[in-house]
Image (cartoon, rainbow, N blue to C red; front, top):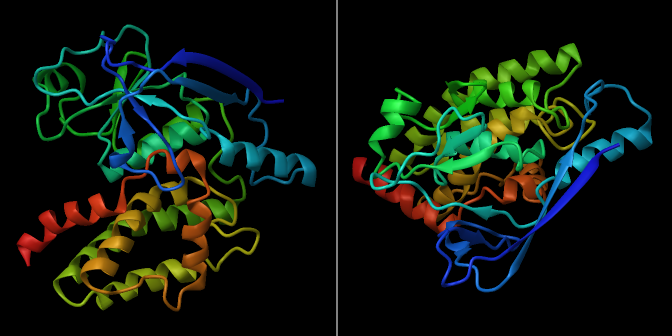
Length: 308
């Protein structure tokens, strides 16, 4: 049975020296939802699953299967106190002291994948977030942590690993928590096919920014077809998995940008995709990592419109 551990910590008041930032999580959250805590109390709940004999994809009694899936989707449903991003003036953490650290950027879609996985596994108290300011990176990050100087990176067992797709698989297989990868061979094979398509999906979608946006239809038609393959749930493999985590940060960005700038609705005529987006937005572990859509649109305008 899952063990629920709840800890209480006082919010960071104006006079506090710890300089942490409290993120309040309404239904639609984003970077604009960061507030400095004012005499509030934060509650941290972590679900741990010591037994990984079965995953949520394997044949289980109906009641048990439903319980495991709902626990996985509910993980991280309370507020989390997030640290401010470290910049060139920040001191490094005590690297290789036995603490498992996930180096991310709050705005990077690749880092977001790993952050979502960490939350879905209920590892908020096992994997410490260390956000990096990508516009003002501390020199010690490249020198002492990750020579590639990119995020995400995972410090675990005195080693640092990178590459987001590898990291989400690594976290799923090396840490306790609900399994996020299928046992079924057919689903496992399809998962790898979908992982392989991500680069093409990204390139097709972003290249459409030069036109009216409709060229992205090829990529989103592929997504609609993929979501139709398994009928045991609304996700890519039927049940929620690493595949959904891998695609979510990009669809989160493409949808508002294409609608705002190109007036192209990616869900029009794609009911499976519309349902997938709706169901993903119910996932508290994912919602805690989301950015404000308006900020995403502005970021993409700065990045892509200058190239048009």
